[in-house]
Length: 143
Image 1 (tube, rainbow, N blue to C red):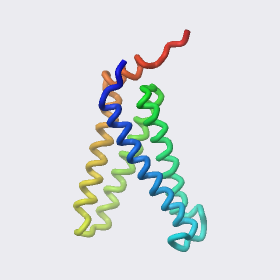
Image 2: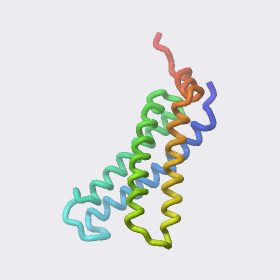
Image 3: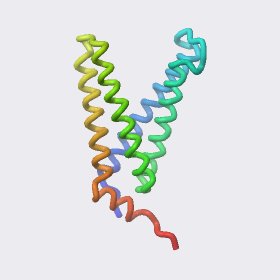
């Protein structure tokens, strides 16, 4: 079966966002080692955040590669990854209310709301019967 265009869009978007997460994770790791700030330990808040961003970014890349190959496991991995992203994006949105700076508040709000909408759409899309059947029909049956 031919890969649905939406799956390609989800995978490309995932590659872009995972790359940004990995870069951000590397910055956090560098900060935790004292290159940009004086941190006492690699396992400080910045170090743990960097490791989480690196791990999450790598998981997303693995899922996106599988999505492009229409592997069912990747669809099943992408759904909870997006659900976790929704939780983190919502928490980040709520955190934005505590640090209101009028110059960037609207931009921050709009970007967080856009990420919530995109994440929800991805979950609904990957759970839709047409997309699910594209993954199931591409899975080889054992002989």
